[in-house]
Length: 125
Image (tube, rainbow, N blue to C red; front, side, top):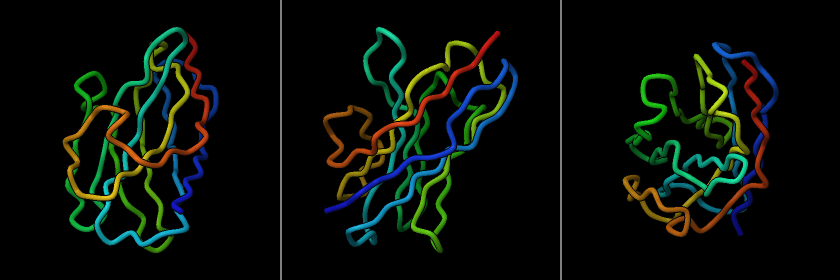
């Protein structure tokens, strides 16, 4: 059973940066896609970014493209999300997710099989 644990959330002012990490364990990770989603207050969960573990192919949500970078940490079996120039509308709980293939273009939450518990990101103006 794959387990995902997020870390790195917190509170920042608009224009600031945060780096989220997701540590994975409990399975084989040769051909999976790992992604980040977020859910703001009163909103549905939405796609942020995804990366394939083997080849590093990436996909980004248009709303955050240019401000975020998703990357792998092979030594730690972890995925990072670097977020820059954060805006108040980025305030949300950010979730790490994984699916057992490399269809990194899938952006619907139900397409992902495993989820972390989430980490809060709060951006103040």
